[in-house]
Structure formats: structure tokens, C-alpha cells
Amino acid sequence: MAGMGPPPKSPEKRARRNKGPEVHVIVSEPVPQPALPKRMPNGDPWPEITRAWWRMWGKDPLAAEFRATDWAELRDTAAIHGAYWSGDLKMAGELRLRTAKFGATAEDRARLRITYAAADDADDRRERRRSGSSGEATKRRYAELKAVD
Image (tube, rainbow, N blue to C red; front, side, top):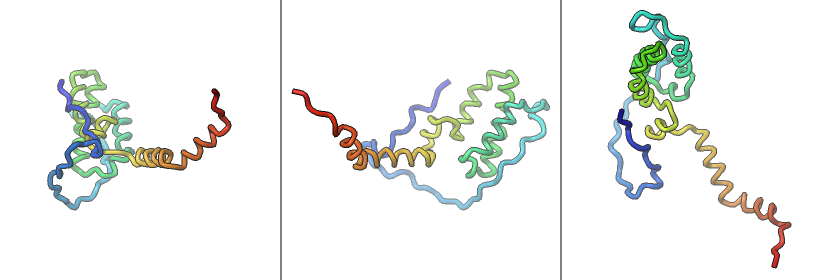
């Protein structure tokens, strides 16, 4: 099955700085995660792993911004997840494609241009180490070394 191509480059590495497409701003409030229906669409009970998967999505920081349509799509994806874990392995490709749209993996989030704040904090700390304060620490660390002729 075909993928979606490589993740996008970071803006700093791009050769061209073309203006992106116009963005339409719409006012919409996030909604809380609804409960899963009592049973899967085929009438079977939900596999416990799918119930845990649904709870995991409810706790994910990305879910704080989900609208009703997002939850509806994720609920339909839960049915595919349940079918997969009930033994219908031909659903794996569709499950992968649908969860990718929600940023399930690090690669998916890169493609969607989503970063967690912790990564930004780590980048800031790394930049501070590079830009000066670590220079003094390096000098102190090597101060006792002597050149050998």
C-alpha cells in the first residue's frame, strides 16, 4: 500500500520561502470525548484493547482540540481497530491510514507539522548550551589539560 511520502522539511531548511495557502479562521469549540457505543457495528462487544485505545486517545494532548467531527471519525476508526484486534487483519492498512490523520506516530505528527512543547523546550536548552553558557563549562572541564610536545 502506498504511503504519503516523506515528512516535510522544517521551514528553516527550505530553499524557497513561498507564502503558504490562505487560511480561513472559523470559530469552533472543542468537545469532550464521547463514550464508545455499547457494541461494535457488527454487534460484537468491543475488544478490551480497543477500549484501552479509546481511553488513550481521550487522554492525548492532541484530543484537547478535537471537534465533534474528529470524534466521529475516531469512533469509526475504533470500529476498524476493534475488527483488526478481533482477527480481521485486512483492516490493518485502513487503520494505519486513519490513525495517521490524527497524528498517532512521531512521523505522522511531523507530516502534520505538530510538535509537542517538550520538544521545543529541549531545543531551547540545546541552543542555550551551544550559545555561550556551555563554552565556559567546556573551558573549566579542560582547564587542567596540558599540551604535549
